[in-house]
Length: 453
View (tube, rainbow, N blue to C red):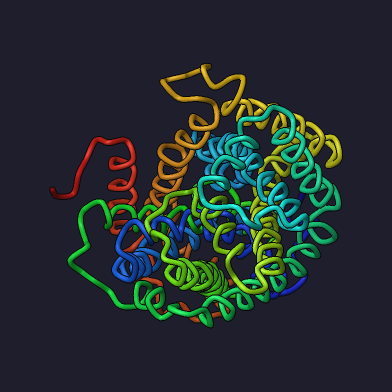
């Protein structure tokens, strides 16, 4: 596909909706709240925001620059910018990462569909935490229901991808992102009106810096990186669809702001309710699928709020999933010359295969281990602890040290159309601060380094 023929997002709103949709996923509603809850609340939030600025935004800008300069998929863009060099392997790692993430992410997304069904059929009423825990375990360790929901989720994602960039990704995210914002604001308003909700807000916004440890710092750094969907090819692929008319730095700021705002709004929706009902804010991942159904069951109007919450999770999962699938499909279409329909079908079948392996990790294949992990944990760990930070590190090095400073400046200014007063700061961050930060995350994730005791 030539540069002249390449499809672009039709407007700035479309770019923001698609890129923010990629960044806003289950991590905003599942991982961020329990990371915040386990790491001291407001102190963690402040450190997280600092790292969004120092690490997340420079890497996102780098990915957009690579995609828009290369005007191809995540592999093709590197080939275009560094012909006859091996940098394209970074893009290939992004394709593999997207496959593996979808292998377990689609399973968790399927859980959201099961819980929409449970919410609609009012199955949270008169159940205590122990009962709800058993309900989740019974569902999760079953064979067919998790697999069927996973397949249903992947099929919905595939339909959007088949429709293409404008009729599929753009139109769907322009509907789903406003819907997501409306639901999360409504849930937040309801949560802060509960008795005792003020304690939850204090937990969120009154920092206790005595809670800060090396673990908290590195967790905040890692969450800032992972929350923005970096290092997996999504932003490079979407960057290739961004018109030269769009101001890249504004797009980066707006996407980062939206992603962070939604993560904070999710915490506002969750923690006042958790404190109101006397529930431990440090619960782990089960906060969403066990603790919150218990919260809804005790809330006035909980039936409606529970349905809205799990629809919210489904929408967030879907906007991220389509960006991951687009990374793979764009690669197959442009590099391997597949038709879009055939590329999507092949991608769907492979993801379902990985999804079945992940779903069965909790039931009949629970004893099947690689490197001491079941398939679900293996896919999760190899992507979050190795591929994503390594991809981000290499992207930072490629942008900061391989690409010429003139070409990068020309791209972020749209060939002189927009001012670049921030350029020197960006280059400094992407050359020095960001790689060091990501390297610390990578070494910490691998258990090879501790900042201090």
